Image (cartoon, rainbow, N blue to C red; front, side):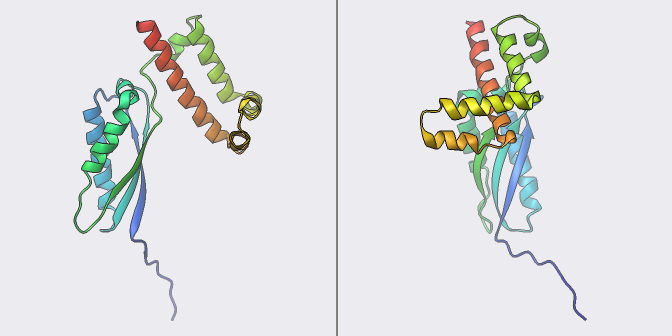
Length: 180
């Protein structure tokens, strides 16, 4: 009698570790969360070596520290925490999709440059026609043909990620300007 049985043949397990910074106040808290998440994933890997991609989401005070070279420090700390022995684990990268700890609704209602900007961002997220306009603007405004081709090939999800990152960077700059 024949039967089919799954037999894992991989040598390295690839893991994506998503972590929310909501409620965190220090990079040290974030480092502990990353280390704990990596340990949990490594324990579920049946003794195989692991490669990790850490993705950070959410809004909070930690965002500001990450924006000031904290991402490199976090990557170094995560790589230092990797255990060496029978397994050989590696942290491939840390991707920062976090945002500043702000009340978007209050900023949108403020009647300022920041509120106009946030309204445009929200419109781009919710209106496919506006998203298409942004894609077309990128294709025509980028000086290098290769960059224009890359913009043309972006999926809606990738373009929305770029818009979210631009929102985060712009808010950082506008809030920094308002604080000084």
